[in-house]
Length: 403
Image (cartoon, rainbow, N blue to C red):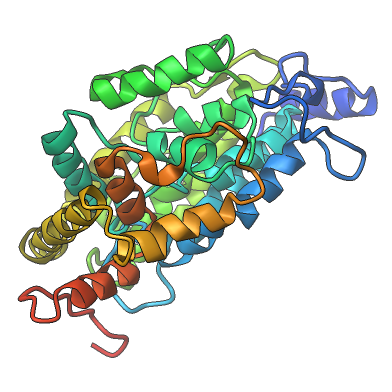
């Protein structure tokens, strides 16, 4: 039987009283304190406040469209009822804004972080991310991680003068690392931020130490987990990978998507209202960790998908990567790397490039290739493979609607 928790009467009355008295949360980020690399542009006004500008910039970046055909968890299925990455970022945004509105935080900043947090994600979900990082590491000694690459997309590839606060929340969102308490850590400006980003390329372990500089960033980080934990279970049941919710341990947070969202949101609000941090109580935090472990055991390690990743996607990635790398090193202007990626980037930056900027195509060859592959949707990558290798021996057969 489903059990949905509610806020305590004490917290409800406190929230109502604060609203009646127009109490401002002193820990919320104030629009006036926004930091941009170019402070002479993108000034807020009444109809386009500070972080609304970031939201609209992110949504109108062409790469935002590609969320719609990138794997969230389940590749190789033709099924419109399972989540793609576009739906995931909407769920994160909605859940995070719900918490942020109750805690009286800056909901525009929350939305900007949420909508941009996975824009640098690869095709084929975390499996694709791991495989791309392996090749990148082999070639450059550096690591690839989607949260770091999301910052690169918004700050280095497509120039839109996105704020430090939004970029920081995106960098620090890593939803694979759960915590009982999320307490913001001041960042200290773009110089320190750039050092932090670079440290993640050099040593992957540094990602585990990232902490958002705002409470708004902390909200998005925990909501990334809340948004996928139960939804992945729901999708797995639709695909027959898991039979029913009874496969998961009974817990106070529940086993279904609706229960998990409601009960974790309630617990966060109960333990965080009016405080300079976000917190789960011990029981819910332990159950959150347990639920993630069960998802890994029953869902994420699905042997059927892992077999396809290993036998088909991995060798396809290697062939595509090294073909594109050869084109980059030879400056082959007729290659798809140039005509479908570099030209695409330059077109989208034609009004934002400043005098003295290094042309994008003069960047490191491996970075150009990584940028291109990470930008692809699943179908785009497969189509490009067959375009580059018409007689290639690898392919992917999708499981259809009626199988």
